[in-house]
Length: 64
Length: 206
Image 1 (tube, chains in turn brown, purple):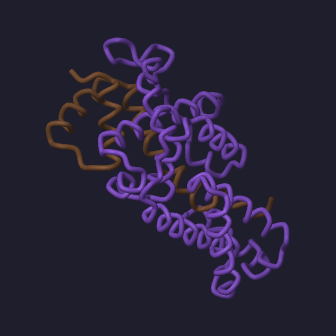
Image 2 (cartoon, rainbow over the protein chains, first blue to last red):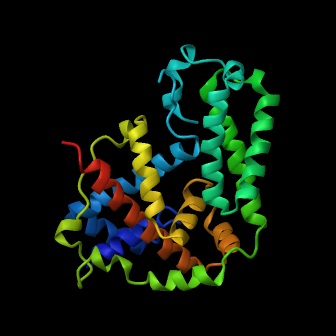
């Protein structure tokens, strides 16, 4: 079974490339059993969303 | 680009008024300069890029609906300029940075145990509403601090990927790293950044 270290690495790489079918399968299996890694996966998406917003100039400060 | 900017459009100052407002310009310029300097690691180049983007905005001020559209636009221009500079720059890494990179080899062993599973205190928790953090200026201060805590090499590569949105092969060329090196670096940067955000923001409330 894949370790959390390996699972987080695959999730990170999936933001740069499409994972192989075998990688997807073992990742899915791991995530089914591992809540912390599921959280990590969601956080990666949040991190990307946050970064996009940061690079767009951060929060809009209207009305401050 | 950012959907949260749209609803308040009628309340916000116009782009033209904003560009007449010295405080707004100073703040905007400073924000852009910080962004460009982090990415380019060269104050002069950063100032030139910011200057060009701002001049473009002043020329086109009538075409923006409001302040947020203007801001989104100047940052998009700035990002393009930075991307061009990074793509052109072939020798980017100095030897010092490479050495430092090597020393970071084992840095996430503190997160995982010997079998590669999360250590008990390090397990990622559920984040409450990341979307609302984006609207909170205190959050951005934490985010900046967390970025500044990354080893410089990690921060640079993370920013190339997530802020400037270069593709892997472009980063490999600009920063002279192999794909596997790039993947390792991004993995580490993301692990650290999420940990820092959880410790200082998402894990603190409630």
